[in-house]
Image 1 (cartoon, rainbow, N blue to C red):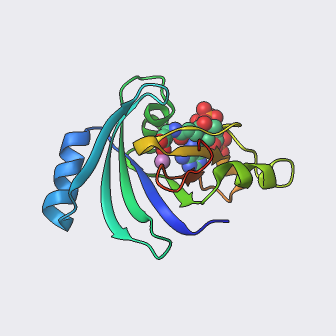
Image 2: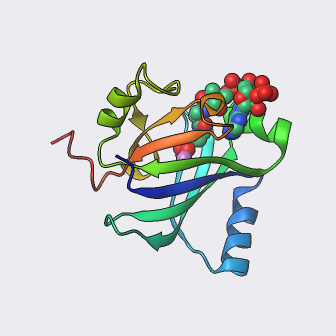
Length: 146
Ligand code: CMX
Ligand code: CO
């Protein structure tokens, strides 16, 4: 059901400075940038490696664009750092069906549009041993829209 680490979400105060850190220290380049108004973030995706399911693993750098966004509130309490981990699944809708009522609270039901045209939901960190866990199907592997 889950075939890779799709990305690690990192909350930061200044996206451009954080991107520059990952470029100059680790050599990772931005492959995609977007603003997600719904989540109140500006984000950059940095591709780290391909995976044996044909997908890839990214770092997702997240800068809040509104003070009441979930990432802004998290930085206020914890400072910058790792915010969530995302597992890639070939079918996020099937994953939600399986999880509903039998496991952790599913925060977006149905799943929503996320980075790079993917579809994603989140599982409550209090039901996942303290880890905010995202489940994501990339646009490439999403066959549900035909
Ligand atoms: N990781 C681990 N624990 C977290 C957490 C995180 N990222 N965010 C909140 N928590 C914990 C808090 O520490 C708090 O615990 P205590 O009560 O023990 O202090 C508890 O959860 C409630 O925290 P809160 O500050 O009241 O936060 P909210 O209830 O407002 O929101 C959550 C928590 C998970 C429901 C919310 O962050 C959410 O809906 N997340 C999903 C969407 C999201 O994260 N979007 C941004 C990323 C977008 C993307 O990846 O594309
Ligand atoms: Co994410």
